[in-house]
Image (cartoon, rainbow, N blue to C red; front, side, top):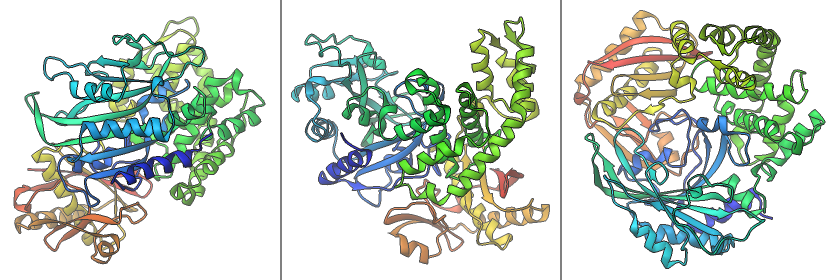
Amino acid sequence: MITRKQLIEKYIKFFESKGHKRIENSSLVPKEDPSVLFTTAGMHPLVPYLLGQKHPLGKNLVSLQKCIRTGDIDEVGDETHHTFFEMLGNWSLGNYWKKEAIEFSFQFLTKELKIPKEKLAVTIFAGDKTTKRDTESEKIWKSLGINKITPLGKEDNWWGPAGTTGPCGPDTEMFYWKDKSNKVPEEFNPNDSTLATGGNKWVEIWNDVFMEYIKDENGKYLPAKQKNVDTGMGVERTLAILNGTTDNYQTEVWKPIIQKIEELSKRKYNDHKKTMRIIADHIKASVFILAEEIIPSNKEQGYVLRRLIRRAIINLRKLGLTDQNLINPIAEKVFETYSDYKDIHKKREFIYNEINREEEKFEKTLEKGLSLFDNITKKKKRISGENVFLLYQSYGFPLEMTKELAEEKNINIDEKSFFKKLEEHQKLSQTASAGKFKSGLADNSEQTTKLHTATHLLLTALRQVLKNKNIFQKGSNITPERLRLDFNFERKLTESELKQIENLVNEQIKKSLEIKREEMNLEQAKKSGAIGSFEEKYGKIVSIYSIGNFSKEFCSGPHAKNTKDIGKFKIIKEESVSAGVRRIKAVLE
């Protein structure tokens, strides 16, 4: 039996012994470079360094990263999928390459975790018209005595780029033979497609990505100047494997939560596996999202959170639980399980209050909404987009929940007209409703880089014009077309204030201020006056960007070299995002 904390400690210590430096667990809400709503992998906080920027801790890194993947929400209910999960990873930023990376993986699996190599199989990139087969990885695996090797295409064994251009490359994935009823077959078919999905016999345990190409604007794959290694091992799946179960939900990071659901519902897990897994998963993910001070809403991250909480409530009702305040007793087990995450414990009261508020809000309309659903689906094979929107707008049913209810009755819904209605009334895009949203930088193009630099100027201008040094960035979204900055402030800005802010930014641009990057320890950075939310976790050495004597911020880039390169700054909109948070959208002309 191995515990979560033991696995994490074993992994970190192993890679530290191989010359890696540990980096801090980053926020679930990406601040800079990822093109997804939440942090979905350990590499997201490292994007600037994967692009060539020097990391303060060196070229070899290791971490434990908390992640949210919204694309897996519909998959939750089986043995292995989760919305919230923890990822162990190690990186080489232009240092060691495939041989060392694969040998590290093999050594950790077989020596540290004691997994027999006979129970391991791997996949490699098969090659296509644009890029060659990864024969290098194939030869390395064979030299280690691994002969169960399956070549697969780009859909399975290729990573990136994160946007339309940038670093990318082949990967090699490691699989574990999980079927206890049969021995691993000695004869292995290299064309066995079950490895692509894990099948019924294999489960993916680790992935090594080799970023050896740069995809350019013409779609060509060019050799990268800096070749990077990026790996990921899921804590939950690995715990299940090491503790002799194929069901992740029977490990210590899920069992206390499941047992609480059993206690409250007086039902057994074995009789209601899918329902209890969904409840446990969604409540755990909700706790961690709420710890980021995201609140349930009909937009972006808040929409995902609302969907998770309400889907948990619907599934609790399937177990016969209809009382209010059902989620918090289950959430308590999340706090107990993750005693090492101080950030969620600091926000415990806030988390409980927001969960209660959302439960109460949903319960008020749920019965009426379910009654309406029954009425509009009587003797029908399709629900109109108008009715789907009515359930969404008036009764708080997320689209996905209506879809699930409809599927139970074998009824289709008119999604196209629903989205049309949605855009008309709330301007919520289909992308946001799917749980995706470009947070931080959409890409690393020249125009996006200029807008990112302008965002720094905007934040400092806000603090100066509004005479408030407690204003901080609460989120950003920067595309080649415009920037968007969310910041804490209690009221709407006046036209005069907005004009002063705009003028102040343009004054700095006209001054041709040089933009400098410095590395210093955290205490020095704080004393220097650099802007940053000090509730966040930073490493011992941090990256600071200064724009003349006007702006100084914690940041990991990229930036313009001089303000004269930015262009004319213009504010196009100022609005409320949520209680105490405002948003400014601006462009460069």
